[in-house]
Length: 391
Picture 1 (cartoon, rainbow, N blue to C red):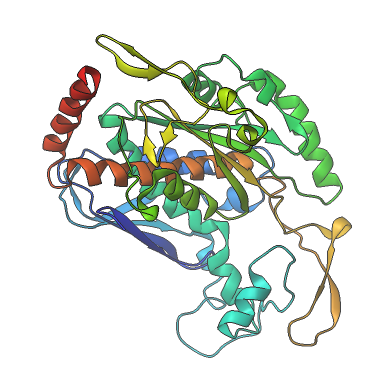
Picture 2: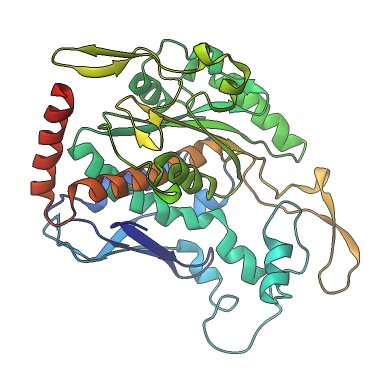
């Protein structure tokens, strides 16, 4: 769908992860430093597992960029897995299969069993290597390119954590500007806009770790400065809220997505649910509230886009809280326990959410304004902003 698209490839313990982005206009300034800053943000957050101590993700741009500017041709980005040297025999491309590190015990809540049945694998490593959230590394790299594009035309994308487990800061957010929420979240080890509350969250995460448990939570992604009219109402698959929801829902462990006040609107009267329209010379049409989350009729309405996502607890649990399962070969019951895992990955998932929202918005932006020369596109966006203010 659309002008901009990407494919990614790679296994969690393979030699590298790669992505190819097609449709990025020529003359966009981009650097590996910019991409690497986003990759580093994905790896942070209190409660992450041992893998984050092994991998220090660094992007390598292999095509589509010359002297810091895009060429308009496909961009290839590679992120090497530093742990690959310990997996060369297990993840070998050629040779005979090995039972070393074979996985036959499917974990409840994971892709293991369904993937094994679907593709005919009795070694479930074939499933988990690709189903793993390690795959999101290249999504963040792609999202960084898209985020740079959006920044160039005054669109800011950010995120923050609203809750982890039963602890929530949602009640405290009212009245705080979105970009301030983001800036404050960047100073928090759990990425909430209230770093002064970090100790409460750390205690909860430590307790979960001691109990062999994992935790989920809720994060929000926002985009400010988005012009009116991205997306469309004319076909179901062009509606921007649907596209954003699908992109965010595709992130591992995400089980719910809402735009604006989402499910909360179902509890209100119509007079309380919609954003009244106002007009002011030099400003054009605007709303004083944003219950719709910046999208009406499948299109942006000029207000900030607000996307909220619920992440379930990670299904890989420690021995104390092992869940029941059945071996795929022997059909014998067992306790699905692992020794190493994240306790909570909501802060990281929020960064991935930024990447996916950035991709969809960049895609919609290029659909409306063209995709050849970035310098020309920027001028068109500016002209359109003037037009919408005077409409």
